[in-house]
Amino acid sequence: MEHSKMKKISILAVSLVVVSGGAIGANIPEMAKTFSNIPLSLVEMLTTIPALFIIPAVLLSTTVAKFLGYKRTVLIGLGIVLVSGVIPALTTNFLLIFISRACFGFGVGLFNSLLVSLISYFYQGSERAATIGFQSAFEGIGGMTLTFTVGQLLKISWQTSFWVYLIVIPIFILFALFVPNVSEQDIRQSRVIEEISYETTGEKQQVTTVSTLEFMGYVILLIMVVCIYMSITIKGTLLMTSLGYGDATDGSNIMSLIGLGAMAAGFSFGPIFNITRERTLPMAFLLMSGAMVLIGYSNSVLVTGIGALICGFSFRTFIPYLFNKINDGSAHQAAFRTSLLLVGFNIGSAFSPYGIALIDSLSGFNTIRGTFFSEAIILLVLAVVAGGNGLMKNRRVFE
Image (cartoon, rainbow, N blue to C red; front, side, top):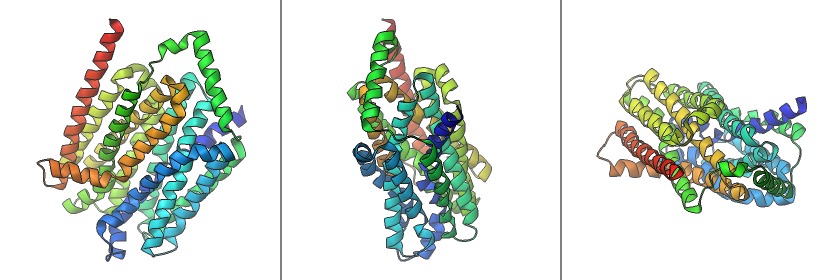
């Protein structure tokens, strides 16, 4: 039993670094001063470039796992994250730092989708849904803790803050000690057994199969929402510093509050989903829309922090909803669809600066506050559409 608990903790511990690529977002103003000869947009990409390189790694991860097994693939990914994460602490060569950030993303991508597959392999039913929620919570804890630590180390220098990635060392050791190696064949066999169990017990009738068209809609929706969500990481510190009510450390603390909200959502996802079900999406979008309005109107670190907290909570209610729906409703395609969701997530994250710029250009707002107001309107529309779609599904069920 003790070993079983440590296995779950070890798998969840890896999630602490899944979203840590953006933890150095508060460094951008200071790094821009150091690299004054480099275009600001390129310096800002140090926050988002890991997400771009997660994409090919996610697509390759299952192929690598076929040959090496899931455990070894995850450990290789963690090793890459450790080495590439601390390189910026050792050099001021921008090209080398840029390459290291790309490698960082590739390392995360190697284990990102495999974590969901491991959870689906080791746990079933309500325990699986709860563990997926816990995974989201651990991502929030990691994002919050690492971002806060970066903010404190930033007081010394932006280079010192990159030592935060030494957190990977104990995670690597835990995973190596307590998680058994699992092959691709083991994963496939477990899904076949699960499908047979569904057919035998009749439980599958309670599961709503996600069609290909509906799934692609989820991927597009995910890209849009991630792009909007990333605006706090990209524009949050700039908003506070340009309006004169915060500095870079405040910006880092605000991003930590996003992680706190995400953590709360992850731990409470199971009970929330049991109550809201198909209303989960419109509820999450409404909350996120309100958070964007709050941040847009804010003139204090406190109000911006409350908005960030709500934003983290609503976003991390939306994410496990998608992953749980895909893993419950389409067992034979779950691994592939999980990978595609992660690709969509990272496309939205990597190209968020351009997505935000597009939103700004299409909206009637021409200020940094306007960015958040425009996004609030988009989220409100998504809430209405998601709510209407849920009502239509309920009508079909009753008919």
